Image (cartoon, rainbow, N blue to C red):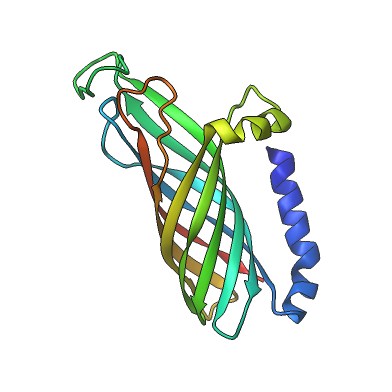
Amino acid sequence: MKQFYVFLIAMSLTLAVSAQKKGFHIGLKAGVNGNKLEGKSFDQEFSYNYLLGGFFQIPLGKRFGIQPEILFSQAKTTTSSNLSSPFNANDPNNKDVSLNYLDIPIMLNMGGNFKIQVGPQYSILMNSHNTLLQNGQDAFKNGNFYLGGGFQWKTPLLGLHLGGRYLIGLNDINSVSSQDNWKSQSLQVSAGFIF
């Protein structure tokens, strides 16, 4: 995964100068990812972790554009010791589970320095025991499709941007049983730089 981040930073720095000439912008971001899984076997509260990655801003008009992103995020939750039973917060056998995702949102940007953003996101569950190619093959089975909305504000301070986004999972990610649906939600707050 470290090679991915080195590649992303090198690509961003190489393209930054030429991208601005054409109206394209490149950005880096990091922040907090609040995640919640809904289902009778899970703690129903948000847990807070991190996200980091980069994006491109591609203009489609004076006040519209698209923003494809590549983000690495982590989600944590507490599960019941028995996935088929309702969550009991007092059960000492509960397990903490960490899930690592490669997120690919494509946001529609509307506005100037303050942009409203809406769009889809596809998140691929990354298995640390698999290669990148194996994770890619499993993406169709282990992925989650989201619909999101939020904002991004480019401040007057050296390209610093601040943003917030809410994402709601649209598909059932329960691969254990068909008895209940597991849906996920994310609340993200981020900051970074636009070049």
